[in-house]
Image 1 (cartoon, rainbow, N blue to C red):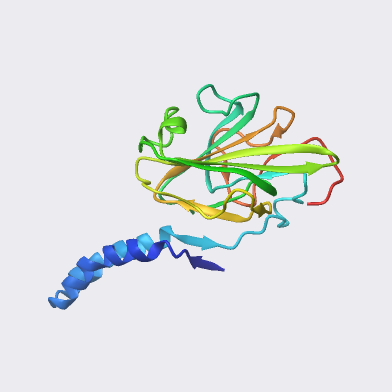
Image 2 (cartoon, rainbow, N blue to C red):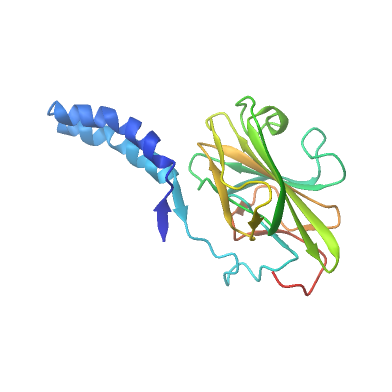
Length: 225
């Protein structure tokens, strides 16, 4: 089932004004043409159900990191200087076009130990500089598996078209793998950082689906999700 996120209401209402004005003026053809815009904006905020443990994506367990966003992988490899947090990380960066679903999901289940919003610029999301100069929210999730602490850092970054990041979780919240955590408006980027021992399972140019596509995996463990 696909629903429309509540963030669609104000943007759709504003976009509908010209169509309504044309209709009131008796210009039916113009009103119908202008009505495409609010419909397209409402579609941008679509929120489809996702199955993290679906038959096409394999079992999601404590070793599995899933994509936090729909889009195309634009980088997968060692943490980039000026992009990755301090320390050693593996990095996956995902670009969301205006046509992708923009609902964001937790790539890994656990407790959110940090949720930090940072205002910034609106550079094109595919540029290197956008990762540390653009408006963004950094989220860190921690989880203990077999006595070992696991940490996944992920980041919502708005881009040239996107002008607002929406985060609906807070520090201290418990999240599950694939849970909805917020959205970004109109074209943006998601970065995921995992420890160096975690194997990346995606490549540049690959299309990924939020909450379903497995992007990385820890060395095998029998712990439940």
